Length: 355
Length: 258
Image (cartoon, rainbow over all chains, first blue to last red; front, side, top):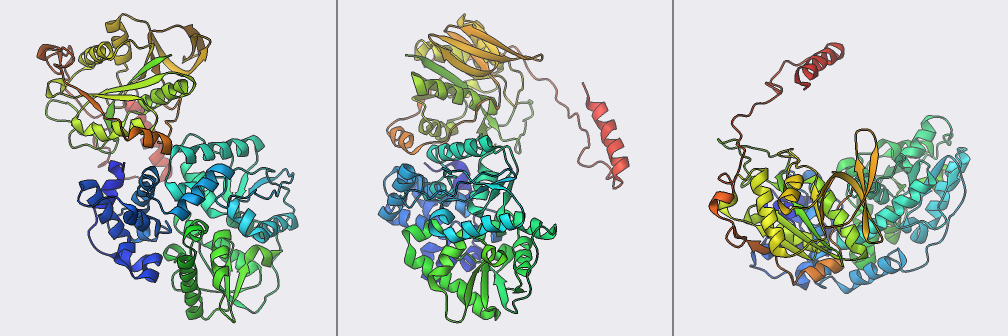
């Protein structure tokens, strides 16, 4: 059942087609059904009973990164991810979601992560901040998690990591919309973080977004400050606790990840990190609020080939910028970009560069 | 088994409040949302139901509330009832309580009736007490926590001076504070269960109510005038000096202080 609010967002399009020009999925597939607007039309037709909400429609709803580029440029101010998320809920309720998606959902419900494996523990005691690693970094990009902890240690920050870090709910929320199951994950996560009683530094901006935006709405607010790891490390650099390194002579462009760019409007910290790591900072054409997504971990979980194409397209942006290195501090971006690093170009984990 | 009845009200979203020529809220064109205190009461009921019981929701309003009521089924409610009839339009708290009483009687005995303590549109807070009076059962107001203690309910009442804890046995009406509980989201399993359920609709006739007992005719009160306490607020002078702005704001707040 799609809410009236979601239908309102789906049906009020002015047909300006700006979203068509921005959607990273549609860029790769070239299919009209992959535009955010087409998804809105499909949902509207399903609501009016002129088109069944079937497996094909469900599939279309999953061919989206929820990157919010369409929202950012919507002339009418509507939010396609809002109705796409609800359409995903509808697909799961009616058992129409793609099998690969259902497998990830089952994993997330059974094990707390979409990979269905035991999450490695980075548990350590500390007194200054609590670092929330997140499942993507913990399982898929462990080196970045270790590098962040090493950067904090270098700056003299005593960091705690929960031994059994609960899922934030963000992955499940992307897979099946915001349902009570997601809220229960969020609640357990907030309870564990609140029990620690320390300010939270969140490595994955996707986790930071759900914590800062949805937890208060769901009655499970984190009672201490929640900061993205990039913003926190940039402050350490600005305060002199983390010393800048000598220049590398390499020009790198920062990849603004979807959440940092469009939820937090956070562009300066990652560039400050890049400069402190000794890089000459260049820019790609699609940057900051207009940043093009390079894929997400959850989408990679159910449509890996398409995500690899999307990541390759981001590398094309880098080539056009003339920079030699793609700089990122996002575990999800690192995971996707690492799928297809072009010859002669480098993918740089900025935490590693700062250690 | 505990049968819980929850009375909820759809109120205009705070961004779309309009009144008609007779100072009645215009609900037809407005974007509606569940009253925040009623959501709190609903979650209190669902939390009690998590241990045992059933939750039935009743509301009074236009037919377009069917979809939001269906959503409440997906959040775990067992039964949802919409009282909808043109005769009910313009009901004051007394006529509303009369309709809810009739619905409660028709739905069968409830061990507990929960309401929000007040609605954000009317702000009267009278319906819970009037409903209890109409049903001849006790009412406990301003409750922020409910929990079972064996076969009795422990009710934590928010007072100006602290919190009072009462022990009570049903049937009774309890009015719940806004923000005391956060309403859960629809869950996948409950959404699947809700697919086969429908919203039950009652008219005035179904409830055995005559035209004289409903809506404006059945109301004891009538709004005769309405005025803004912030005349010209949006068109007032703009102050760019922060110190002068603070002084102006203080003066304005003193003016509207009751």
